[in-house]
Image (cartoon, rainbow, N blue to C red; front, side, top):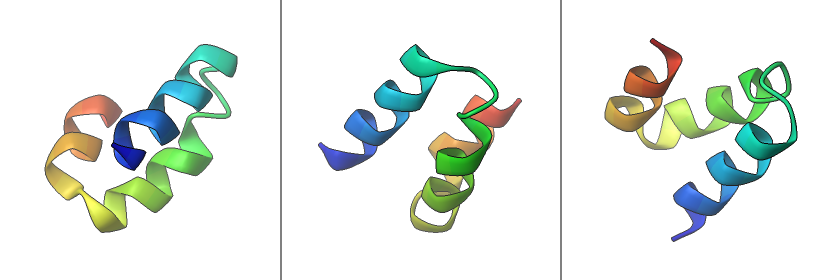
Length: 38
């Protein structure tokens, strides 16, 4: 699962860095990305 891997990397690294990758994932998967953003 690439989506899980991409989110796991930034989340473990830094919460601020998560904003960049989340934006990219938001385009591919709006439902999961939106839930994580909130």
